[in-house]
Length: 378
Ligand SMILES: Cc1cc2nc3c(=O)[nH]c(=O)nc-3n(C[C@H](O)[C@H](O)[C@H](O)COP(=O)(O)OP(=O)(O)OC[C@H]3O[C@@H](n4cnc5c(N)ncnc54)[C@H](O)[C@@H]3O)c2cc1C
Image 1 (tube, helix red, strand yellow):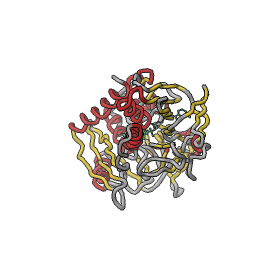
Image 2 (spheres, protein in one colour; image 1 turned 90 degrees about the vertical axis):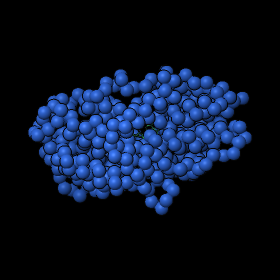
Image 3 (cartoon, helix red, strand yellow; image 1 turned 30 degrees about the horizontal axis):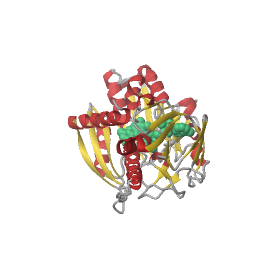
Image 4 (cartoon, helix red, strand yellow; image 1 turned 90 degrees about the horizontal axis):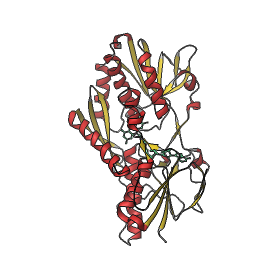
C-alpha cells in the first residue's frame, strides 16, 4: 500500500509539499490535502484587492483545479489532531496517516485588540481586504493609520507596502494633500534583518510625507474619541485605521498536544520534525526562528518533501533546512524591491537589499505565475 501522507492546510507549505511529492512519486504516494477553504490566495494579492488593482475573483485560485497524480484535495475543516496516533478528525470524517504534515498557518485574533473590530479595519484576510477596498474610495480627508497590533505577524514588509501604496492610491485620486498617513510598527526599523532595506523604506516614507512611528504596537482603539492607543499609552488620532491584527496559532493546533507555550508548533529547525514520530510542521504554524512568510513555508515544505522522497527511494537524506528566503517589496510608483534574507546560518539574521526596479516587478510576477502553474496545473 502507498504511504499515506496527510497534509493539513493547502497554503504555501501544503501546496508545495503536495506538488513535490506528486512530481517525484506520482501514484506511488497517497497524499490527502485538506483545507477548509475552496481557494488559495497569495498574501500579496490582498494588497491588490484592497487598492482596487484586482477583484477577489481574479486572485482566488480554486482548489478544484488541482489535478496531480497521487494527490486528493478535500475541502473539510479539521477539528482535532491526534499526533500520537497520526489521526485527524474533520467535519466530514477521520483520516489516518503514516506521515502527517501540519501546515495550518496562523489565524487572526481581532478581539485581542480592543476596539479594532468596531473602530478599525484589518486588511490581512480576503474579506478584510475586500471591505477596505470598498471603503477607501470614500476616504478623502483626515488621518489614516496603518498600524500593527502585535508581533509576530505575517510578511513583515507588508504593512510598509500598505502605507506606500495608500500614498499612491490617495495621490491618484487627487486627495493626498487633504490626508495624513501614519505608520506604526513594533520593530525599531521596517525590516530589521536588513538595515539597507529599512533605510530605503524610511527614505520612501519621508519623501512621501508618511509619518513613521517605529518601536510601538497599537494596543487598542477608542472609536468614540477616534484615537489609537499605543503600547506606551500615547495616542494617535485617526479617521481611518487599517490594521494588521494580532496573530495566533489555529485553535485546533493549540489543542492538539503539538503546541508549545505560544500555541505554535516547535520543530527541529533542520528537519521540521515535531517531537512525534512521522509528524512534521511547516510554515507559519511552526516556530523555527524564521518570519511568517510564504517563501519560508515553501522552503520548509521542500525539505520535508525531499526527506520523504529520499526515504521512499532509500536515498540519502537532504541537506538541513537553510532558513533562506527572498521577499519582494512594493515601493509604490509601480516599483518593486527585493530583500534576500538569511535567518539561520549566522549568529543573527542578515538581509541583502536589491533596489526597486521594473525588472523586479517582472520577477515578482514570475514568482506568482510559476507557483500558480505548478500548484494548480495552469
Ligand atoms: C497582506 C499580506 C502580504 C503578504 N505578502 C507576502 C509576500 O510577498 N511573500 C511571502 O512570502 N509571504 C507573504 N505573505 C505571507 C504569506 O501569505 C504567509 O506567510 C503564508 O501563506 C504562510 O504559508 P502557510 O502554508 O504556513 O500557511 P497558509 O498559507 O496561511 O495556509 C494555511 C491553510 O490552512 C487552512 N486552515 C487553517 N485552519 C484550518 C482548519 N481548522 N481546517 C482546515 N483548514 C485550515 C487555511 O484555510 C489555509 O489555507 C503575505 C501575507 C499577507 C497577509
